[in-house]
Image 1 (tube, rainbow, N blue to C red):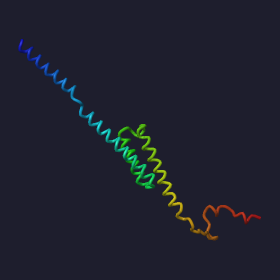
Image 2 (cartoon, helix red, strand yellow; image 1 turned 180 degrees about the horizontal axis):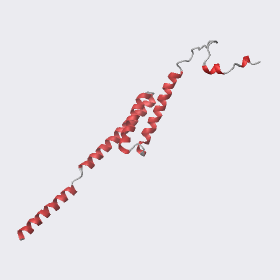
Image 3 (cartoon, rainbow, N blue to C red; image 1 turned 30 degrees about the vertical axis):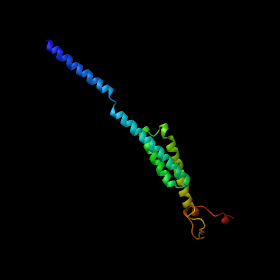
Image 4 (cartoon, helix red, strand yellow; image 1 turned 90 degrees about the vertical axis):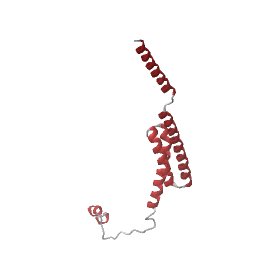
Amino acid sequence: MAAESTATAAIAAELVSADKIEEDAPAPSTSANKVESLDVDNEAKKLLGLGQKHLVMGDIPAAVNAFQEAASLLGKKYGETANECGEAFFFYGKSLLELARMENGVLGNALEGVHVEEEEGEKTEDESLVENNDNID
């Protein structure tokens, strides 16, 4: 009986010491998450800086790509509605607006200087339904 209680006490002591070892050791997933978290933040800051540089230099498509990547990284980490994503989404939207203006300018100037004549005999459907004011007595 004494041998059983000694064996039980030894097993209990081993379990307690194993618990202490587990408590003292840092959790590997936490430290890995911190390193990964810092990497994501640093990468996003680099992309934001690069995007702003492209925006100032007038390379709008490259700025859009940089801001898109930064917003995506921060959105995956914090969630798309987090405050940390605000700057990235602001500059992403700003660069998209500039891109739209640039593309609209190209399309808007496409027909500039072209003289479009409409023949008198041709009438569209809308014009044929409405009487001409000159024909009224």
